[in-house]
Image 1 (cartoon, protein in one colour):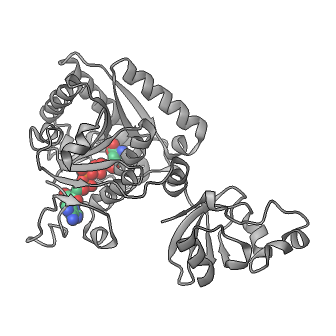
Image 2 (tube, helix red, strand yellow):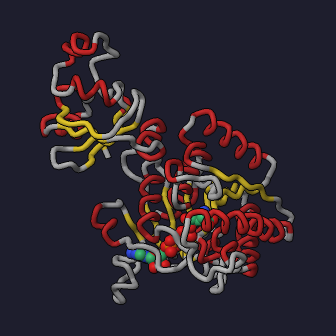
Image 3 (cartoon, rainbow, N blue to C red):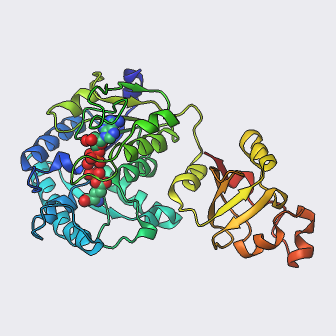
Length: 373
Ligand SMILES: Nc1ncnc2c1ncn2[C@@H]1O[C@H](COP(=O)(O)OP(=O)(O)O)[C@@H](O)[C@H]1O
Ligand SMILES: N[C@@H](CCC(=O)OP(=O)(O)O)C(=O)O
């Protein structure tokens, strides 16, 4: 199975977690960075293009602020990242230069991938860098990012980068050997799972938070990332980045870490973007009949099936679609704003024009703009 997947890999996204890159006292671990640069160089020699998503800016900077533990406020976190990011890049630059390779920095926010034009600009930049044999190193633009436009963790960002770069594999290097069937801190008998065929609710339940003072999101965000990548048809392999040679072992097809297979039904780019890149602005609660036809028969959402609208949003916004019990089961782009929906919900499509005095169409969310999760 691994061989089949690895055989097709021409372009690879490697995500490296903060703990892998830092010493216990929070400074950058230059020896590890040097070793990873050597391993990545070996992959480049095999003709594989590598895009890195690297954490570690915050962890590398917090020592300079005299903080032993996690920064407590958002400005502290942003200040730590502002100090740490150039240090991190300098460390990579020097480590790769020793092997004759050049690196480049890209700092992204969710806005950059939500907006088609920015997305295409980022893609063109990455393609150009790869064309010139330069290794792009991506991180979230922590110093400017606000809640609204934050990815929040580099696991999810790395999954979106596989889409941006059309890579064939995502490798997540972290501080643990792979995915365990339960959070190993709470369950000492937990076992490593070498293969995950599908990221089911049960699998998600086993994914706990981070155990280190530098990591963000823990296993939960890694599972979310593997799911996102999987819905693009991209497999994820997660392994311990602190173990020398593991990256090479993974690419040699050895059974290290956990392989997450891609989903059987892959979402097209537009639907993936709706489901995972856009940020939902509100909720639309539908009745059981509407839930059924949307979820099972792939129909569009009509006003008659809507029972409640929550939040304020414009026409063209992304919203969560929830069943009568409030559970989200789909996401989509609305053709009507929340204020318009409040007037037409529960009515037949034919009544829209009479109620509003105009109409954009019969559907509230057209099936082309609707993703069942
Ligand atoms: N089921 C699980 N399997 C493995 N690790 C888990 C699990 N649940 C929670 N974790 C925790 O997730 C941590 C890795 O996530 P995190 O600290 O965010 O690392 P990174 O900095 O690499 O992103 C592990 O060290 C472990 O403590
Ligand atoms: N952008 C942040 C890292 C965020 C993050 O996801 O960290 P991690 O869980 O260690 O991959 C930084 O560089 O400090």
